[in-house]
Image (cartoon, rainbow, N blue to C red; front, side, top):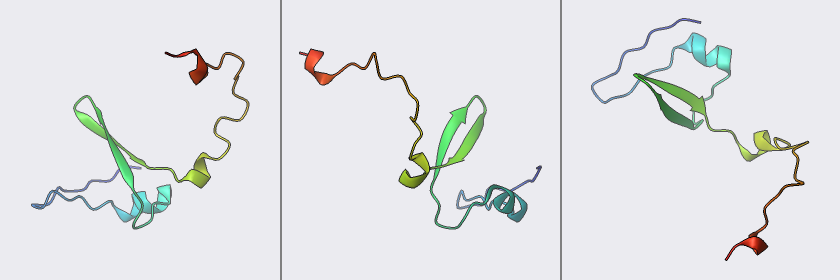
Length: 70
């Protein structure tokens, strides 16, 4: 997947259709921009539904509760 986009005078970039379709990105979807060296990582912000079960199987035996704080 290789595509090129140009930054407009309003500092906007249109994501090429081939990229949008391959990654199933929709209009209105939110994205986070993460600086990486001289580049930028663009990732969609997950919804709460997509995060459901993300910690399934996590080891909670060494969980630090609020009771042990001052």
